[in-house]
Length: 476
Image 1 (spheres, one colour):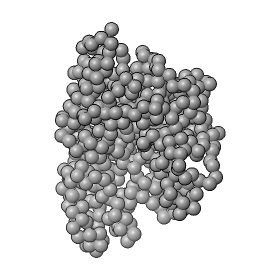
Image 2 (image 1 turned 90 degrees about the vertical axis):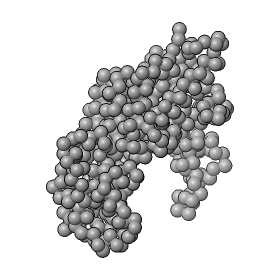
Image 3 (image 1 turned 180 degrees about the vertical axis):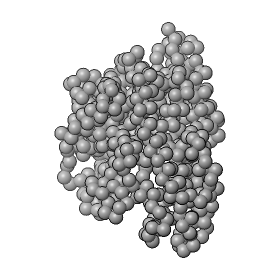
Image 4 (image 1 turned 30 degrees about the horizontal axis):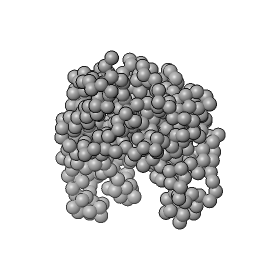
């Protein structure tokens, strides 16, 4: 029997919980930063609406519970952040500190993709860059501030929605935005955000999407269990003098995520994206006991686990694909888990490289890598055949929000080109992880206690612990 090359895209949608414990006293809002709201209008809904146009292609999206909470509060009009509070403030009521804050922060975003395409926004940006912030403060009128407040919010609305009559009118208007205009822009943002969770549920119910979850507030579970787990990858690391472990919190995070998932999506979750793809043997029993079926991590974690370094050829393709492109079985006292490991380089090409390339060329390059993987796997078969004689799974997993800021039109031309090519390719099949595991359960086994303790950042935890700079802060 012959098989296509199976490919699982996993898009990780995550923002930390920006909500303060109590409302900010100056009235600027109980959310410290606006990124859940702004990514909510630019990145979460359009990604799956584009996919919906190509029904043959199936993918997986991870929605972190702390993100869902924030999206729902913005959609209900119950959340406010400093950027939003200033957006709906009348220009003649802006105080000196507010104007300085606007000049400093309301150009946040990649200027090539979010500012330059809009002449009025670009004009204000150029004034700040050429004349300086002090000049802007001394010379800008209420009309300038009003336009800047409007454009910062408009630029973060995804181009997929620009054919909306109101949005189209605002884009053509360009300048002289009123408080009423800005209030309507914020209302439009809420309309978009309100559609995110229902659209995900609808597409999962239709079978095109699998939705996974993450421990509730995105903790690094191995470090929550035991800070000494960081020593597995970096034995010489300097750790806090007091060893920390709070294992009893692990099932709480997993259960809260489980319960929220059932409430929002009407079914039990199957997959769990461990925060920062961080894993260790100690956390696996908790995950299996809660009922999750599979998890994902990075190729570096697999390499450390197997004692195998993944060599790549001159084009960047893995020289030993038979180790990476398959699921593994993890043994736990509460039953087996499956684990898939992402191709780090292919994931990073989307995350950090393709945004600077011509979209069609970038899409062809990615497909070229997948075709090279298939050729390499065919070459390793006992009999030299032109088709794959067993099922293999290439996992491409990355943040589903941050990279698009560097793409033309927020990634729309790239994704359309990629999906069009993949829809017509009979040798590559996009699947959800659960679809693959149901048809082809993991056979290779990682024995109990043998999984490496590490994350998707270099296979260790140095991003979150062990930084000598923290010693001066009294943390160690």
